[in-house]
Image (cartoon, rainbow, N blue to C red; front, side, top):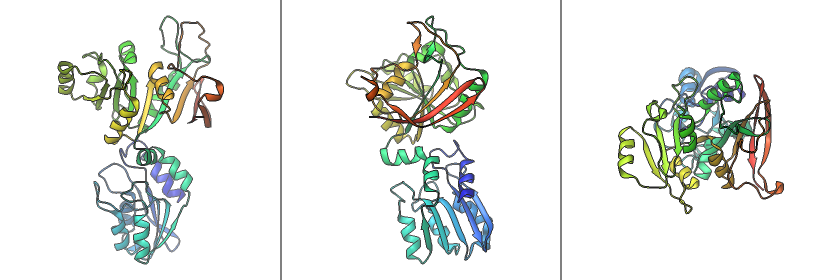
Amino acid sequence: MRRALELASRAMGKTFPNPLVGAVVVKNGRVVGEGFHKKAGGPHAEIMALRQAGRMAKGGALFCTFEPCFHQGRTGPCVEAVLSSGIKEVYVGSRDPNPLTYGKSVRFLRSRGVSVTEGILEKQIRQLNEPFFCAMRRKRPLVTLKAAVSLDGKIAAGTGHSQWITSPAARRHARRMRNRYDAIAVGIRTVLKDDPELEPLDGRHRLMKVIVDSSLRLPLRARLLRTKQPVVVATAVYRPAKEKFLVSRGVTVVHAKGRDGRVDLALLLKRLHVMEVRHLLVEGGAVLTGSFLDERLADKIVFYLAPLVMGGEKALAAIGGRGAESPQKAARIVGMGIEKIGRDLLIEGCLQYP
């Protein structure tokens, strides 16, 4: 199962919108087939492993990180291929949280005389597929907040200058990290100030770009409109002429008006879920990041901490919004990890709300 888990992780960021799944076929104590799911529409991990095993699969054991799928999706149900291969034992890391499959393949295989053992390395498998579990159960993407900050929590000097707070090594790492995500979101103020492209490191990864733009102020010449990845603009107003132009450029306009006249983030997440976004990276700015925290919609945090002290009352803090009323009511980071990247520190963890 550890080998299946390692295989699954090789496709990190490439299986949108599917989970990361690996499989290994064993016969007489020897590995005779293995595989992992590489991309949506391609063969699932079990199929890859069974194809490699060929006739050797008969009477053997299949180790798979997820239970074989039971439903017809972009490909056929894997459970039937497992049964027809002659596999006698199936070891499952985790049940598939998709309600179309959950537990059904396990019960089906057992009813056909196949021995099924569950729960092997389940914690690690769930952790690897945390966005998929969130999407299936909460009907919204997993949300990770990311920022590059000085030691005193600033993302820009009082003059507005923000380039560059972190080292080149940290910036390369941040761009490479974008490959883990299905979509990246920024607020309109970030677009107006920095005119970013929001590209991953290699520029080829499919990364949906989400602009939270309540008043639909997005410049028609914004650089991100000229990139290859899909663009979504979330707004709280109707401006037919501008929307028509944006749509003609391939942009998807999403209306998600909240009671305060701004974009309703919870509604936006539901719309992104329908678009099959599993993991959303929020890169700023301070207002958008603070809003996700205020609404308790952020799940994880990734901060690049630079050894700088910016100072200044007018220097922009990383997180805006209403904020916590007291330290006791603040969101806490649990399961925190710290890694040195260049001269900076990378701090990651899950957000826990009181």
